[in-house]
Image (tube, rainbow, N blue to C red; front, side, top):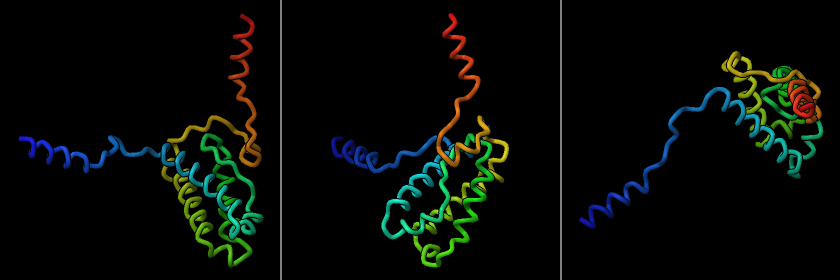
Amino acid sequence: MRLTLAALLCLCSFARPSHCAPPTCYSRALGLSKEIMTLLDKIHTFERTKTCAEVLPKIFLDVHNSCINTKLRDFLYVVLNHPSQYCRERPRMLLLKRKVQNLYTIMTRICYRDVVFLMDDCEAIDTGHVRPYHAEDRLQLLQEDR
């Protein structure tokens, strides 16, 4: 009895827990944008790719911004046509190119109507500073009047 229970417990401990639902288009785009931002941070700080990052424009990805598709397209153009052959062959730059291409494909083709854009602030993608959403400002004013 104890041997059977121990074997069952051992077998259950090796079972890999799985997710109940597959990732949605939105969750994949959100996760991929975070991966790209992390990879860009590594490229800007890593000694071998720091010189390659000087050519790249600054970008702060937000899948809720309606300007993301045009900014991704422009960023992808710079990554694909990097002036240095050395930089084009770096593994991190190749990974960045692949991830940006995947996100652009997801945003423009696969999730075309699934992602809801909450803002239209192209400057926020370039600078990282988001203007306050007007509905939130009005809500705050209404609460302060009470």
